[in-house]
Amino acid sequence: MHIRLRIRGLAPALLVSAVVGLAFLLPAGAALATVGIGYGVQTSGGGGLIGGPDAGMGPAPGEAVFIRGTDNQVWVNHFDGTAFSGFQQLGGLTNGDPGATSTPTGTDAFISGQDNHLWQNHFNGTSYSGWRLLGGVLTAGPDADVLLTTVPTIDVYVRGGDGALYYMTSTDAGVTWNGFQALHGGLIGSPGAVSWASDRRDVFIRGLDNGLWHMYWTLAGGWSGWEPLGGVLTSGPDAASCTPGHLDIVVQGQGGGYYVKGWTGTAWTGYALVPGTWTSEPGITCRPGGAGIIDIFGRGPDGALWTLSEAAH
Image (cartoon, rainbow, N blue to C red; front, side):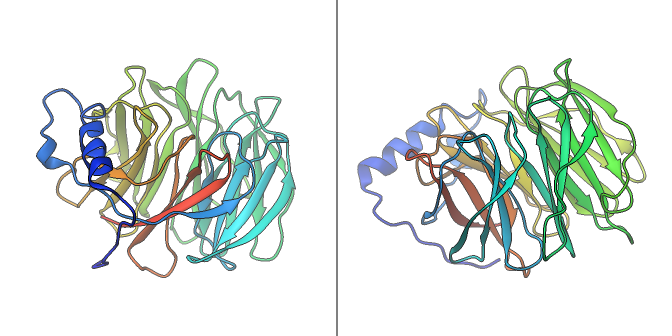
């Protein structure tokens, strides 16, 4: 996690503008001194996106990044930490941003189809299964997490027809599913979810006040209540956990910038500005291999897929 990252081509005037811009994201009364500037260099993955991407850190050939193309179909592009493999079409007409998560042996992509139902496509390390209907009524794109139980447990979180948060669970790595369960809480856009252990779930939303909200589940205590984390969001959040007990959440703030907020194991950090210009909600995943790096994905001003890397909290 002791990684030295560099920022290139950031003129002093732009740096001042970036710091001033943080004030528009912070909740009332937050101290600017608690906010850091993130460092990174963007890499293009090409293509054309509608909305934001999502990624899973599953088996080779590296992180699988899913997008909604300009044809409203789902495409995947694998990123190995240095370069992209190129896009592969997966079909499946979608009306929202895809969601994804990975187990040690595979990656699962989820979408809201044009019928507003939840659909799943599984990658087993060699090939994709094709799209399978899971049901429900969605009003935004889904997100998913994995609890690394003996047989991995996959959760999918969605915004339902009433604007509230729901989730469904598979205790056999995505083969069979239970029904949707309500977590309540009104949200705008897609949720973001992650698990750092077999007995922990964390989910984040953009609330009706445009702030970031968080709730968590433990095996011993069940679901917590909603915790406000401030900020002024313009899209749904995404989350990753590269170390048990630690979290990284990426949000899009006013002005279109991405910001990272972390849980260090004992406290929340402030919001740190991510370099670059972004035009979609973010996607985030941990770099495979325990490198302590998060890879952030988003749509650039050219409509293409871009990524940059940051040190994880």
